[in-house]
Image (cartoon, rainbow, N blue to C red; front, side):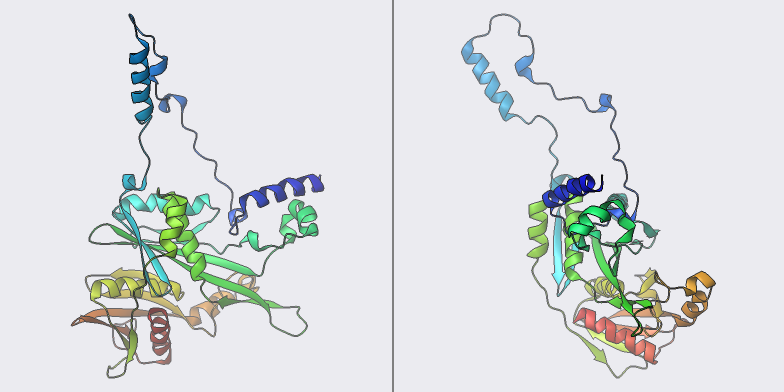
Length: 361
């Protein structure tokens, strides 16, 4: 039985060629079945009974007209609005003419259909986030894996976990969709290799681009067009620098407020910050920040969670800040404020600015 299952699964994997597979992390959803009375086939006039005498010439002309006419409503990207990709550095995002209210349920279905579990689904702030998941496509496809592993799948695991955050912002012409990736790697903490811990690993821009192109396909674009659009998006370089003449930690971005606001939000997502709230009219992001020395204590694989010790460590590492985004002429200044709204020049505030500059440079 193991050999038979392995053979079938290997054959399916060879045909699909998919290098991204998170479906085993959650139950697969069953596609909705449309009742037959709602999916009537389009009638073809060629097979309708004809009254009277019909000549061969008239029949041929009618067949040509029927074959040239569309048999049903066309499904194309135009039916959901224009879509395009904008890029700056390694950051890409999807621009659509649809409002966030119409995009939100489609994006939610997109993640669920791919086997993810949503731990954050807040339409008010326009952010949804998946739980930590494992890319099963990275497992080695050797003989042992293809035989025993297909039956006892839980015995095999990679040392990496991925989480994706999606943010939908309202724009003047529709919406902008951002997908950001966070990664963890399990490493040994001693020479005896009997204890492990999870540590953050760098963001994967290619993985973000992959899911961005798949989302375009889900919204109606053709796969070839979506991948080409994401890969060939024109780059628009942005310069960001530290500002030293301010009472608190601050930076300057060579962009107008509208674009800088969206870029700062994307940098926060990619930097692992948690945006609790935002006020565009006041130019404020309300974020949670975790001390890098204690980062990962809330992530999977830590025994302190089992005994209740992880909550105290996470609370000690957690700090709340406000990011003030203000237009200064043709540029934008970003300042770090503490939870009371005053300028902060502490070490954590400086680290926040340094991380944002690294994302925006």
